[in-house]
Image 1: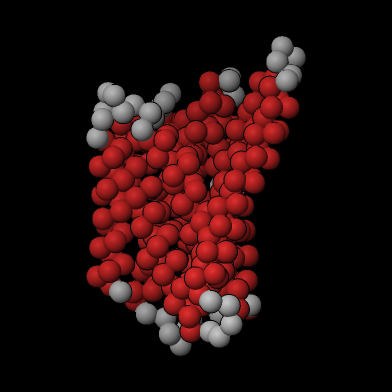
Image 2 (image 1 turned 180 degrees about the vertical axis):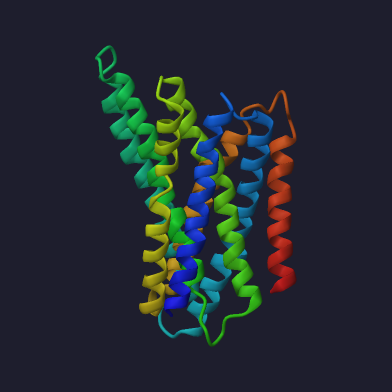
Amino acid sequence: MNTIVLMALVATLGTWFVTALGAATVVFFKSPNPKALNLMLGFASGVMIAASFWSLLQPAIERAEASEGIPAYLVATAGFLSGAWFMWGSDKVVSFTRKRADSTQGMPNERKNRIIMLILSITLHNIPEGLAVGVAFGALRPESCTVEALMGAITIAIGIGLQNFPEGAAVSIPLRREGYSRKRSFLMGQASGMVEPIAGVIGALLVVYVEAILPYALSFAAGAMILVAVHELIPECQRNQKAQPYTATMGIVLGFAIMMLLDVMLG
């Protein structure tokens, strides 16, 4: 079981590393290429949507059906809505704090407050993403772990890692524009992803040692991922839709298709 937790830690350290790569763009560029970012965000959205069903919801339903007790459809629905609610609640907390910061307009610490809110917002969003990776790896069992199941967990980590790249840049570049040094902007940008390994280990430990919550945890992760993809990533990647009408859309389609292909082919 410790091996599974270690795998979850390694995977979430990988997603943190991608966040750091995104933050490192501040060292080389004043701003990242919008077309490349839109394509990457779209691709990550497609991967996350597909992974939410084939790698999280479907296994959650199968495991809930295998155990006696609450009907599987109630387990999956409750977990899914809880995950979405968790992300919605974190957004509400960030929005409330941001409004408090906005009320300081004209005061000397206004810019500092805005930067803090930006970092806090992205850090909060990284918590359920780390949990999703941890739960996916925690669901693996030594006696029943297959290449297909392992690939499903890895693709979830890859999908989340891809969307972490622009998040790292979204923190470091505004910091640089506010006058922070490149080094400090990078350090603060990558720090927003530090919660993912912690959340990943917690998620893996929970499902490893409290197996009864596994169906809920899997569907919880799916709900969180769907909300992030639909509420944040897709609108963000469609910002330049008029100039590049299909760049982000084809990224979504491609990401979904590749994830679906891997899950169905290997499953």
